[in-house]
Image 1 (tube, helix red, strand yellow):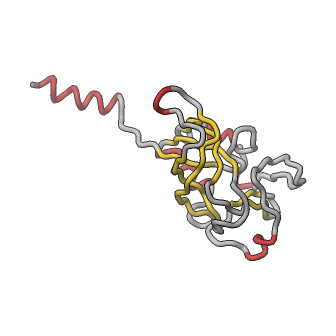
Image 2: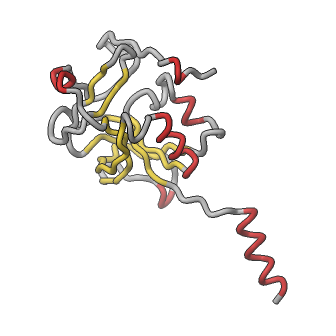
Image 3: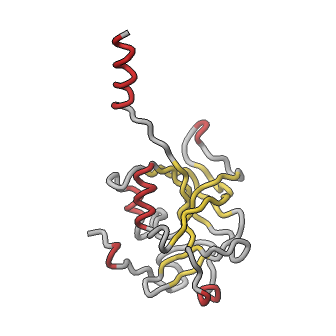
Length: 175
């Protein structure tokens, strides 16, 4: 009896329960982009790549501000089916991303539906191409009216042919 009381305590300390959430990234946090290193930094939490995906509903993805930041505007049905990546993240990473994205001041974290393009992993955790998956995404809280006049993009690349090179704001410096 004594062992049965200690065992659950031991298991919960050694293997704490970690709740994971799915997050869709479409900008500088994607693989190969300027802030991807933040997704890999264990100090920020855990992030496991699940699949490439695109939004089921079109959204305007624009590049704005003097830093050329990609923004997904809260105008579902307008724009394009935006390409990005789905990650499974732990609570620490979700909290880090909220701070990094200045949620809720600049962005609102909301759930949207995504169509899986390809999946990583094996077995039952693999996301099937063509399947619909729900994930959190960071959408601009309030649209700047002039931003709706900007070109929209299906996919973001910091060094894309749009000619709008991303500039890391001082408060987001890796140092």
